[in-house]
Length: 411
Image 1 (tube, rainbow, N blue to C red):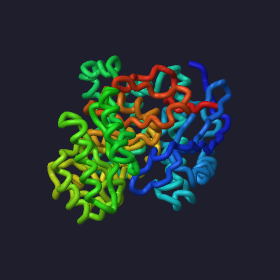
Image 2: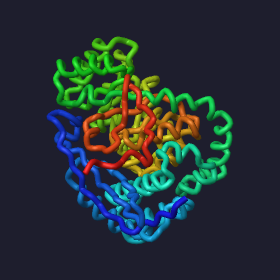
Image 3: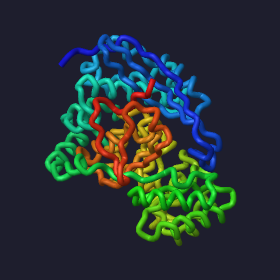
């Protein structure tokens, strides 16, 4: 295998204008999908590309943070780097000065996500395989070496990870059919917040016709009766067999969340997503108990493994929506997925990357970790900007075959 050495780290502030109404939810009323992009230059023709999602303004700050954090990567050979990446991850995350700006959240952690994702992309390209295959083929010990398990030793130690992966290896052949059949998707673009009732109906029918068996509707309106009416409208449109998720984007207080979720029970939601503030673990715990058996889903705005651990310990969430462009990249995504496996919780990622990287990660989670195959969010608004866009047909993500993490943007 040819040696590939990182020679420089560059950044790109990549912003993309959406069509009217796209991406709008109860709090993000004028989004501009954007990425703080890391580009790892090497002594070869290969480059590693990493993404961290923003909504436009502030992307330049994440790019500045990428440059400030990148020094430990320059001059490193990619195989040597990834053989102990967990140590490098912790070194960067615990920068003696920049850590003050987090810790492990906000601009500096988004920058770490972009850097981390670029390293994994370059590693897979250097081995000439798609990221999912690289990860699936790694030994348990090699997986452990990728992770920073600090602050988790009360629930997840290195030997626990090795034991889990070794046990699951005995049964992974039973799950290989996903590599032929693909991974189910769900359509998020059905019900953006400002879409009219007529538009939502048409989108829901179109999603079903396209093969999707699950879809999401944006909620969280100041007029909670509007949320209930629109949810019932979608249920009426698609019938009882389609799964419908409702996403409040953190807009309810706990008392409002309890009331509205109980009213929404009539349309049988598959989950209620981000019902209140993402740092309020105890509010989610109280809500989960009050509205049972309606499941609660969280993760889009949970920035690191420790807070995810707290959610799991408190029984405050039923679906874990960890996003590798929100936590510290693919490494921390795997850590959170292992935590979820330990607590018996399914991982259904939020796709700040539009599903480009996460299509690889759900295959790893299912095949190697034994995570339940549920579905992966699908948002097609940026697919034309990617060199190798995710291929979704009949509502199913087809496993990518090109080397890397599918993160390369068009020139």
